[in-house]
Image 1: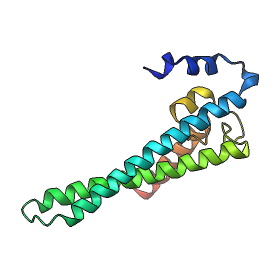
Image 2 (image 1 turned 45 degrees about the vertical axis):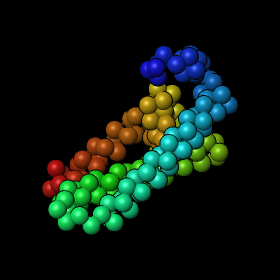
Image 3 (image 1 turned 135 degrees about the vertical axis):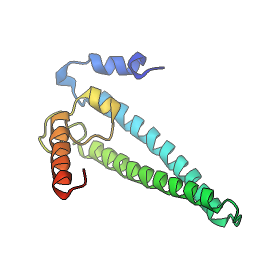
Image 4 (image 1 turned 90 degrees about the vertical axis):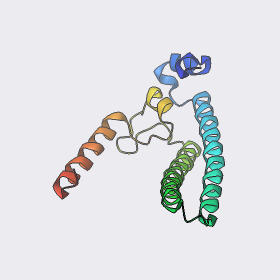
Length: 144
């Protein structure tokens, strides 16, 4: 079911602006983040197990293929470890009462953005400024 067809999401989006980050919205995001955390943690266990199995593989004929698969698994584990850290930070922001507000401007991030990226710390405008700065600096260093 697409997210927009979810009746709970529709109810949240229909709430007035004054209701932003009320108890119901915070509970929704806390539940969603906790579910995502459990999913990522379970997948990380699978990835780490696959890495351990690959490292034990002694088949020299397929060593290049095994090394490539291991490299991909390590990148995946790194990405998911970073995502897990962001999920923990978002859950902490819920507990501290800062969730849903831009870390740079203090303005609301907005429900549509949080529904797409529940770990978002910046409103769209601040995120765009950050990406422009990063692009500018990477061009100066010659990375782009």
